[in-house]
Length: 394
Image (cartoon, rainbow, N blue to C red; front, side):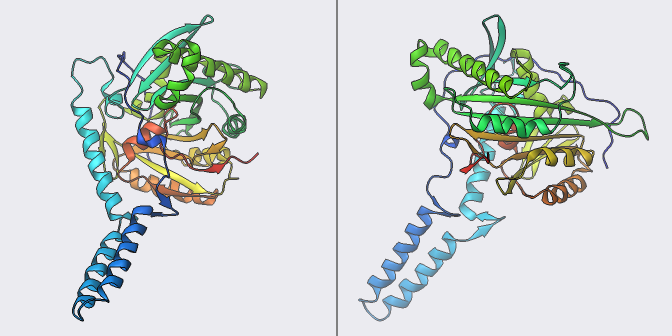
């Protein structure tokens, strides 16, 4: 089991603004599928059948030739690799390579934490004051986001938050209404050993984030003056409504300013474990002697996340984050889980964590080829990655 002697420091640097970019394709997940099969695959299969049928009317040698070609095409179309269709695997590898190229292309003098650049090269964070409250608003290639941090029962801003708060927040988000695209709850836990041989100590932070996508911003920001100022006012209005909803549910919170939002992203993504910029590989995110693994948690929609968070903390995983995103119509995404351990301990830790997750009613699936976007999606940025169509139970 991995042991660390002190709680890692959380460092961050100033970001800079980026231009508005087109809406990411992740805003429209699930299209073009019939269950696990793509519509394009069915079309190819139909064309093969039609081709064989047409060949039956030709010379006698044409039918077996057409049948052989059709069989090869069908096998290639439905071939699997690593639990995915082979063309999905190929596409994921190409996207991963492009993400690495984009991160490497960021100018060295740009005042952005290199650890964040590895996950979101376009990320920038500004700060505005809304009714006397400082609010940090982040911008990346999917749009704009902001977040609040829950306070502990004692009301202390630095106290550890109970895992049960995650399910209470999800109940709030299921009925939440605001001019935003989606909301998210993030539970991040650090586990460390105060002294050699001492029992582990843990500290948990819970954030609630919301996002306004580029597509939705074109509509929602018009009534608030339009342009970038209108977008910022829309996000601020969403945070105001979110705060009222949390307060009504008995949950104390505080909005995050620019520095706090940046530090929250770094912490939730586990990047505060070291100062080295991580590098994405097919099997994880590695840097500074640490390896991060991200998993999608499949399971029944009535499975509560609080017990899962507590169970993972009990494994003494040094840094772990559970995040769930909710759409505006109350549909919750399959939760994401990020765990981190020293390079030589990660395999054993992942095995233990997967066993624990299965005992709590979820089925973890590694996000091979997507660990970079997956880790970023476990930060309080309300990323669209993993949005599904199952409603949150009420």
